[in-house]
Image (cartoon, rainbow, N blue to C red):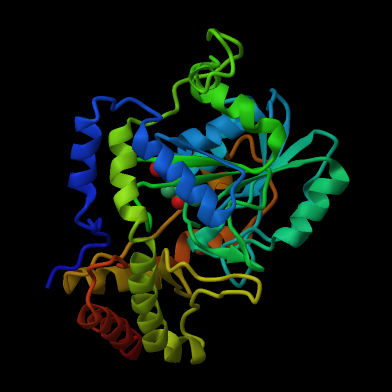
Length: 377
Ligand SMILES: *Cc1c(COP(=O)(O)O)cnc(C)c1O
Protein backbone atom coordinates (compact mmCIF):
# COMPACT_ATOMS: atom_id res chain seq x y z
CA UNK A 1 0.00 0.00 0.00
CA UNK A 2 1.21 3.50 -0.81
CA UNK A 3 -0.49 6.36 0.98
CA UNK A 4 0.72 9.85 0.00
CA UNK A 5 0.58 12.70 2.49
CA UNK A 6 -1.78 14.68 0.27
CA UNK A 7 -3.72 14.17 -2.92
CA UNK A 8 -5.51 17.19 -4.41
CA UNK A 9 -9.20 16.43 -4.88
CA UNK A 10 -11.02 17.34 -8.08
CA UNK A 11 -14.78 17.77 -7.85
CA UNK A 12 -15.21 17.09 -11.57
CA UNK A 13 -16.42 20.54 -12.65
CA UNK A 14 -13.01 22.27 -12.71
CA UNK A 15 -12.28 21.52 -16.38
CA UNK A 16 -15.79 22.53 -17.43
CA UNK A 17 -15.57 25.92 -15.72
CA UNK A 18 -12.07 26.56 -17.05
CA UNK A 19 -13.40 25.86 -20.53
CA UNK A 20 -16.26 28.30 -19.94
CA UNK A 21 -13.79 30.94 -18.77
CA UNK A 22 -11.66 30.41 -21.87
CA UNK A 23 -14.69 30.58 -24.17
CA UNK A 24 -15.83 33.83 -22.56
CA UNK A 25 -12.86 35.47 -24.23
CA UNK A 26 -11.66 37.17 -21.06
CA UNK A 27 -9.28 35.18 -18.93
CA UNK A 28 -7.29 37.94 -17.26
CA UNK A 29 -8.11 38.87 -13.66
CA UNK A 30 -11.50 39.92 -12.26
CA UNK A 31 -13.53 38.04 -14.87
CA UNK A 32 -16.84 36.25 -14.42
CA UNK A 33 -15.56 33.48 -12.14
CA UNK A 34 -13.53 35.82 -9.95
CA UNK A 35 -16.75 37.80 -9.35
CA UNK A 36 -18.67 34.60 -8.60
CA UNK A 37 -16.04 33.58 -6.04
CA UNK A 38 -16.06 37.01 -4.41
CA UNK A 39 -19.87 36.99 -4.17
CA UNK A 40 -19.89 33.51 -2.68
CA UNK A 41 -17.24 34.31 -0.05
CA UNK A 42 -18.84 37.60 0.93
CA UNK A 43 -22.31 36.07 1.05
CA UNK A 44 -21.43 32.94 2.98
CA UNK A 45 -18.85 34.26 5.42
CA UNK A 46 -19.73 37.94 5.74
CA UNK A 47 -16.31 39.31 4.79
CA UNK A 48 -16.80 42.99 3.90
CA UNK A 49 -14.69 42.79 0.76
CA UNK A 50 -12.84 39.86 -0.75
CA UNK A 51 -10.14 39.98 -3.41
CA UNK A 52 -8.70 36.84 -4.95
CA UNK A 53 -4.90 36.87 -5.12
CA UNK A 54 -2.32 34.58 -6.66
CA UNK A 55 -1.42 33.20 -3.21
CA UNK A 56 -1.90 33.68 0.51
CA UNK A 57 1.68 34.96 0.54
CA UNK A 58 0.55 37.78 -1.78
CA UNK A 59 -2.51 38.51 0.36
CA UNK A 60 -0.25 38.86 3.41
CA UNK A 61 2.06 41.20 1.46
CA UNK A 62 -0.95 43.30 0.48
CA UNK A 63 -1.99 43.49 4.14
CA UNK A 64 1.49 44.71 5.13
CA UNK A 65 1.33 47.40 2.43
CA UNK A 66 -2.20 48.42 3.41
CA UNK A 67 -1.41 48.98 7.08
CA UNK A 68 1.64 50.90 5.93
CA UNK A 69 4.32 48.91 7.76
CA UNK A 70 7.52 51.00 7.92
CA UNK A 71 11.11 50.04 8.78
CA UNK A 72 11.37 49.59 12.54
CA UNK A 73 7.69 48.85 13.15
CA UNK A 74 7.15 45.80 15.31
CA UNK A 75 4.82 42.95 14.42
CA UNK A 76 3.86 40.21 16.88
CA UNK A 77 3.28 36.72 15.50
CA UNK A 78 3.87 33.09 16.51
CA UNK A 79 7.30 31.61 15.86
CA UNK A 80 5.62 28.35 14.90
CA UNK A 81 4.28 29.36 11.48
CA UNK A 82 5.00 29.33 7.76
CA UNK A 83 7.67 31.72 6.47
CA UNK A 84 5.15 33.73 4.45
CA UNK A 85 3.51 35.03 7.64
CA UNK A 86 6.86 36.59 8.51
CA UNK A 87 8.23 37.52 5.08
CA UNK A 88 5.32 39.81 4.25
CA UNK A 89 6.33 42.11 7.11
CA UNK A 90 10.10 41.61 6.83
CA UNK A 91 9.87 42.82 3.21
CA UNK A 92 8.62 46.17 4.56
CA UNK A 93 11.40 46.40 7.14
CA UNK A 94 9.44 45.30 10.20
CA UNK A 95 11.00 43.76 13.28
CA UNK A 96 9.32 40.48 14.20
CA UNK A 97 8.46 39.80 17.82
CA UNK A 98 7.64 36.14 18.29
CA UNK A 99 5.10 34.76 20.74
CA UNK A 100 5.32 31.18 21.94
CA UNK A 101 2.62 28.58 21.25
CA UNK A 102 0.26 27.29 23.93
CA UNK A 103 0.95 23.92 25.49
CA UNK A 104 -2.44 22.57 24.34
CA UNK A 105 -2.12 23.39 20.61
CA UNK A 106 0.38 25.22 18.35
CA UNK A 107 -1.62 28.48 18.25
CA UNK A 108 -0.01 31.57 19.77
CA UNK A 109 -0.37 31.99 23.52
CA UNK A 110 -2.44 35.17 23.64
CA UNK A 111 -1.75 35.63 27.36
CA UNK A 112 1.88 36.50 26.47
CA UNK A 113 1.07 39.10 23.87
CA UNK A 114 0.50 42.13 26.08
CA UNK A 115 4.01 41.87 27.53
CA UNK A 116 5.43 41.98 23.97
CA UNK A 117 3.73 45.24 23.03
CA UNK A 118 5.94 48.36 22.83
CA UNK A 119 5.26 51.88 21.46
CA UNK A 120 6.60 50.57 18.11
CA UNK A 121 4.13 47.69 17.83
CA UNK A 122 1.88 48.11 14.82
CA UNK A 123 0.17 44.75 14.29
CA UNK A 124 -0.57 41.31 15.69
CA UNK A 125 -0.74 38.40 13.27
CA UNK A 126 -2.54 35.37 14.73
CA UNK A 127 -2.24 32.15 12.69
CA UNK A 128 -5.19 29.77 13.03
CA UNK A 129 -3.09 26.60 12.97
CA UNK A 130 -4.83 23.54 11.51
CA UNK A 131 -7.91 25.73 11.03
CA UNK A 132 -8.49 25.92 14.78
CA UNK A 133 -9.20 29.44 16.06
CA UNK A 134 -6.77 31.49 18.08
CA UNK A 135 -8.51 33.05 21.10
CA UNK A 136 -9.43 36.32 19.38
CA UNK A 137 -11.29 38.31 22.06
CA UNK A 138 -8.18 39.06 24.18
CA UNK A 139 -6.36 40.12 20.98
CA UNK A 140 -9.22 42.39 19.90
CA UNK A 141 -9.14 43.97 23.33
CA UNK A 142 -5.37 44.58 23.11
CA UNK A 143 -5.70 45.94 19.58
CA UNK A 144 -8.30 48.44 20.76
CA UNK A 145 -6.35 49.58 23.81
CA UNK A 146 -3.01 49.90 22.00
CA UNK A 147 -4.34 50.98 18.60
CA UNK A 148 -3.01 47.95 16.68
CA UNK A 149 -4.11 46.15 13.54
CA UNK A 150 -4.95 42.46 13.56
CA UNK A 151 -4.07 40.55 10.40
CA UNK A 152 -5.39 36.97 10.54
CA UNK A 153 -3.28 34.38 8.76
CA UNK A 154 -6.31 32.26 7.88
CA UNK A 155 -4.45 30.22 5.24
CA UNK A 156 -5.73 26.97 6.77
CA UNK A 157 -8.94 28.31 8.23
CA UNK A 158 -11.62 28.40 5.54
CA UNK A 159 -15.07 27.59 6.94
CA UNK A 160 -13.94 27.48 10.55
CA UNK A 161 -15.35 29.61 13.37
CA UNK A 162 -14.56 31.46 16.59
CA UNK A 163 -17.58 31.79 18.90
CA UNK A 164 -19.77 31.48 15.82
CA UNK A 165 -17.89 34.08 13.76
CA UNK A 166 -16.13 32.90 10.58
CA UNK A 167 -12.34 33.00 10.86
CA UNK A 168 -11.03 35.72 8.58
CA UNK A 169 -13.97 38.02 9.40
CA UNK A 170 -12.64 39.10 12.80
CA UNK A 171 -9.36 40.94 12.21
CA UNK A 172 -8.76 44.15 10.27
CA UNK A 173 -7.92 41.86 7.35
CA UNK A 174 -7.28 38.18 6.73
CA UNK A 175 -5.32 36.10 4.24
CA UNK A 176 -6.52 32.74 2.90
CA UNK A 177 -4.67 30.14 0.84
CA UNK A 178 -5.96 27.93 -1.96
CA UNK A 179 -2.67 26.08 -2.40
CA UNK A 180 -3.24 22.44 -3.32
CA UNK A 181 -2.54 21.32 0.25
CA UNK A 182 -5.50 23.30 1.62
CA UNK A 183 -9.15 22.13 2.00
CA UNK A 184 -10.38 24.20 -0.96
CA UNK A 185 -7.72 24.71 -3.58
CA UNK A 186 -6.79 25.94 -7.03
CA UNK A 187 -3.23 24.64 -7.25
CA UNK A 188 -1.89 28.04 -6.27
CA UNK A 189 -4.19 30.81 -5.14
CA UNK A 190 -5.21 33.01 -2.25
CA UNK A 191 -7.54 35.72 -1.04
CA UNK A 192 -7.45 38.88 0.99
CA UNK A 193 -10.55 39.51 3.10
CA UNK A 194 -10.90 43.14 4.18
CA UNK A 195 -13.18 43.75 7.14
CA UNK A 196 -12.45 47.42 7.77
CA UNK A 197 -14.07 49.86 5.31
CA UNK A 198 -11.09 52.21 5.47
CA UNK A 199 -8.96 49.74 3.51
CA UNK A 200 -11.37 48.56 0.80
CA UNK A 201 -10.61 51.06 -1.96
CA UNK A 202 -6.87 51.08 -1.41
CA UNK A 203 -6.81 47.24 -1.39
CA UNK A 204 -8.26 47.27 -4.93
CA UNK A 205 -5.68 49.83 -6.03
CA UNK A 206 -2.66 48.03 -4.55
CA UNK A 207 -3.81 44.79 -6.17
CA UNK A 208 -4.03 46.49 -9.59
CA UNK A 209 -0.48 47.91 -9.86
CA UNK A 210 -1.36 51.06 -7.96
CA UNK A 211 -4.03 52.09 -10.46
CA UNK A 212 -7.72 52.83 -9.97
CA UNK A 213 -8.60 50.42 -12.75
CA UNK A 214 -11.28 48.64 -10.67
CA UNK A 215 -13.14 51.90 -9.99
CA UNK A 216 -12.81 52.77 -13.70
CA UNK A 217 -14.48 49.53 -14.78
CA UNK A 218 -17.33 50.22 -12.37
CA UNK A 219 -17.74 53.63 -14.04
CA UNK A 220 -16.83 55.52 -10.87
CA UNK A 221 -14.00 57.51 -12.51
CA UNK A 222 -13.76 58.50 -16.18
CA UNK A 223 -10.14 57.53 -16.68
CA UNK A 224 -7.72 55.42 -14.77
CA UNK A 225 -4.16 56.11 -13.82
CA UNK A 226 -1.40 55.59 -11.33
CA UNK A 227 -2.68 56.76 -7.95
CA UNK A 228 -0.69 54.80 -5.34
CA UNK A 229 2.02 52.18 -4.98
CA UNK A 230 1.05 48.64 -5.84
CA UNK A 231 1.86 45.44 -7.62
CA UNK A 232 0.09 42.71 -9.57
CA UNK A 233 -1.67 40.42 -7.12
CA UNK A 234 -4.71 39.27 -9.07
CA UNK A 235 -5.00 35.76 -10.52
CA UNK A 236 -6.23 34.80 -13.97
CA UNK A 237 -9.93 33.97 -14.21
CA UNK A 238 -8.84 30.39 -15.04
CA UNK A 239 -7.69 30.01 -11.43
CA UNK A 240 -11.01 31.44 -10.22
CA UNK A 241 -12.93 29.03 -12.47
CA UNK A 242 -11.10 26.10 -10.89
CA UNK A 243 -11.69 27.50 -7.41
CA UNK A 244 -15.40 28.03 -8.05
CA UNK A 245 -15.86 24.33 -8.81
CA UNK A 246 -14.29 23.54 -5.44
CA UNK A 247 -16.39 26.11 -3.61
CA UNK A 248 -19.61 24.67 -4.94
CA UNK A 249 -18.60 21.46 -3.17
CA UNK A 250 -17.42 23.06 0.05
CA UNK A 251 -19.85 21.23 2.34
CA UNK A 252 -19.20 17.83 0.84
CA UNK A 253 -15.42 18.32 1.04
CA UNK A 254 -15.54 19.51 4.65
CA UNK A 255 -17.89 16.69 5.62
CA UNK A 256 -15.62 14.02 4.20
CA UNK A 257 -12.52 15.51 5.85
CA UNK A 258 -14.31 15.66 9.22
CA UNK A 259 -15.36 12.03 8.97
CA UNK A 260 -11.76 10.97 8.39
CA UNK A 261 -10.47 13.34 11.11
CA UNK A 262 -12.94 11.94 13.67
CA UNK A 263 -11.93 8.40 12.78
CA UNK A 264 -8.24 9.16 13.40
CA UNK A 265 -9.11 10.88 16.67
CA UNK A 266 -11.19 7.98 17.96
CA UNK A 267 -8.54 5.40 16.99
CA UNK A 268 -5.63 7.31 18.55
CA UNK A 269 -7.39 8.67 21.63
CA UNK A 270 -6.35 5.64 23.78
CA UNK A 271 -2.69 6.59 23.20
CA UNK A 272 -3.39 10.10 24.44
CA UNK A 273 -5.26 8.75 27.46
CA UNK A 274 -2.18 6.72 28.35
CA UNK A 275 -0.09 9.90 28.12
CA UNK A 276 1.96 8.61 25.17
CA UNK A 277 1.04 11.27 22.61
CA UNK A 278 -0.79 14.61 22.40
CA UNK A 279 -3.68 15.05 19.96
CA UNK A 280 -5.21 18.25 18.54
CA UNK A 281 -7.13 20.22 21.15
CA UNK A 282 -10.15 22.24 20.08
CA UNK A 283 -11.04 24.87 22.70
CA UNK A 284 -14.69 25.61 23.51
CA UNK A 285 -14.56 28.78 21.38
CA UNK A 286 -13.34 27.02 18.22
CA UNK A 287 -14.68 24.67 15.55
CA UNK A 288 -12.77 22.09 13.55
CA UNK A 289 -12.59 22.41 9.74
CA UNK A 290 -10.50 19.24 9.58
CA UNK A 291 -7.70 20.94 7.71
CA UNK A 292 -5.08 18.76 9.35
CA UNK A 293 -4.69 15.74 11.59
CA UNK A 294 -1.55 15.74 13.66
CA UNK A 295 -0.13 14.14 16.77
CA UNK A 296 2.67 15.32 19.01
CA UNK A 297 5.31 12.79 20.09
CA UNK A 298 7.26 13.05 23.33
CA UNK A 299 10.68 13.49 21.71
CA UNK A 300 12.35 14.11 18.37
CA UNK A 301 13.83 10.57 18.43
CA UNK A 302 10.37 9.10 18.92
CA UNK A 303 9.06 11.09 15.95
CA UNK A 304 11.94 9.94 13.73
CA UNK A 305 11.21 6.33 14.69
CA UNK A 306 7.51 6.72 13.94
CA UNK A 307 8.11 8.41 10.56
CA UNK A 308 10.48 5.58 9.66
CA UNK A 309 8.03 2.83 10.59
CA UNK A 310 5.20 4.55 8.71
CA UNK A 311 7.42 4.95 5.64
CA UNK A 312 8.30 1.25 5.74
CA UNK A 313 4.58 0.57 5.42
CA UNK A 314 4.23 3.05 2.53
CA UNK A 315 2.65 5.83 4.60
CA UNK A 316 3.94 9.37 4.14
CA UNK A 317 3.64 11.36 7.35
CA UNK A 318 5.49 14.66 7.63
CA UNK A 319 6.63 17.11 10.27
CA UNK A 320 5.83 20.79 9.95
CA UNK A 321 7.36 24.20 10.74
CA UNK A 322 10.81 24.85 12.15
CA UNK A 323 10.57 27.67 14.69
CA UNK A 324 11.24 30.96 12.90
CA UNK A 325 13.08 32.44 15.89
CA UNK A 326 15.70 29.69 15.48
CA UNK A 327 15.94 29.88 11.67
CA UNK A 328 19.25 30.71 9.95
CA UNK A 329 17.68 33.93 8.63
CA UNK A 330 16.19 35.25 11.85
CA UNK A 331 18.02 33.81 14.87
CA UNK A 332 20.46 36.76 15.00
CA UNK A 333 17.58 39.22 14.82
CA UNK A 334 15.42 37.48 17.44
CA UNK A 335 15.48 39.06 20.89
CA UNK A 336 16.79 35.88 22.49
CA UNK A 337 13.73 34.79 24.48
CA UNK A 338 13.33 31.01 24.73
CA UNK A 339 10.14 29.74 23.08
CA UNK A 340 9.96 26.19 24.39
CA UNK A 341 6.50 25.26 23.11
CA UNK A 342 7.32 26.39 19.58
CA UNK A 343 10.49 24.29 19.72
CA UNK A 344 8.55 21.32 21.04
CA UNK A 345 6.10 21.41 18.12
CA UNK A 346 9.03 21.84 15.70
CA UNK A 347 10.65 18.68 17.05
CA UNK A 348 7.68 16.53 17.90
CA UNK A 349 4.62 17.34 15.77
CA UNK A 350 3.75 14.86 13.03
CA UNK A 351 1.06 15.37 10.37
CA UNK A 352 -0.80 12.32 9.04
CA UNK A 353 -2.25 11.88 5.54
CA UNK A 354 -5.64 13.61 5.27
CA UNK A 355 -7.36 14.16 1.93
CA UNK A 356 -10.79 13.65 0.41
CA UNK A 357 -10.02 10.36 -1.29
CA UNK A 358 -8.33 8.75 1.69
CA UNK A 359 -10.40 5.71 2.68
CA UNK A 360 -11.60 4.55 6.09
CA UNK A 361 -9.50 1.41 5.63
CA UNK A 362 -6.40 3.53 5.05
CA UNK A 363 -7.08 5.60 8.16
CA UNK A 364 -7.45 2.38 10.17
CA UNK A 365 -4.22 1.01 8.70
CA UNK A 366 -2.32 4.20 9.57
CA UNK A 367 -3.77 4.31 13.09
CA UNK A 368 -3.00 0.60 13.64
CA UNK A 369 0.60 1.18 12.56
CA UNK A 370 0.92 3.98 15.11
CA UNK A 371 -0.66 1.82 17.84
CA UNK A 372 1.79 -0.93 16.96
CA UNK A 373 4.72 1.50 17.26
CA UNK A 374 3.71 2.48 20.77
CA UNK A 375 3.19 -1.17 21.76
CA UNK A 376 6.76 -1.92 20.67
CA UNK A 377 8.52 1.02 22.28
C1 LIG B 1 -0.21 27.61 3.23
C2 LIG B 1 0.11 28.69 4.17
C3 LIG B 1 0.58 29.96 3.76
C4 LIG B 1 0.98 30.26 2.34
O1 LIG B 1 0.00 30.05 1.40
P1 LIG B 1 0.35 30.23 -0.16
O2 LIG B 1 -1.02 30.31 -0.78
O3 LIG B 1 1.09 29.01 -0.55
O4 LIG B 1 1.12 31.48 -0.32
C5 LIG B 1 0.75 30.96 4.70
N1 LIG B 1 0.51 30.75 6.00
C6 LIG B 1 0.09 29.55 6.45
C7 LIG B 1 -0.18 29.39 7.92
C8 LIG B 1 -0.11 28.48 5.56
O5 LIG B 1 -0.53 27.31 6.02
